[in-house]
Length: 188
Image 1 (cartoon, one colour):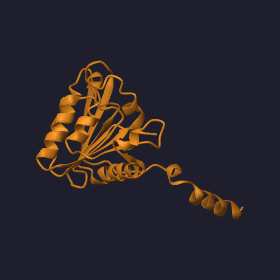
Image 2 (image 1 turned 120 degrees about the vertical axis):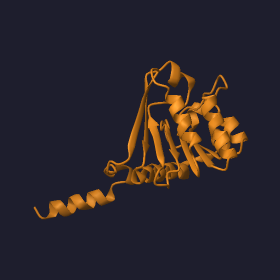
Image 3 (image 1 turned 135 degrees about the vertical axis):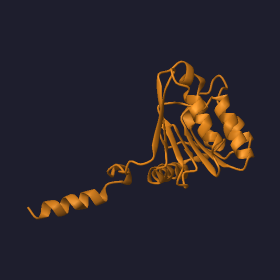
Image 4 (image 1 turned 180 degrees about the vertical axis):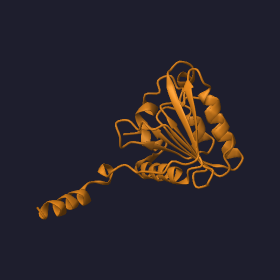
């Protein structure tokens, strides 16, 4: 019987980092929520982006929203550092040329392409995540017109929880380490 706990501990230590238990972060701060198409989720995101002072980190599965792209470009123009991770497959499949990723990259925003996963399905915006008042924007909401006007989506804006923002930023950085620079990450 004494061997079982030691064996179990050894097995846990040998598990890959991805298989480790979920991170638990104490509840803190405020939660703003929106449900599209009834609520103006895009306007809520625009307000958060317009309030950025230092940095914005985006992780996008699909990014075709012109207003959100313009807000990121404007944030960069006012001195906010803006960084973006995008799903490779959605960029490759951009048959209608609607993706705003090329415009964001042309505006000087560093973009990386996630190539490791079948789908880099995260939809996350971190605004000033290293500040006490930082915001985490997440949910099912893709950064698209359809997400606002046609789909049933949810959006959460979590503010004032530095531990949560740090966990999301650490995850963003982990994904960034596996990503390739745009547009090189699009070629096989």
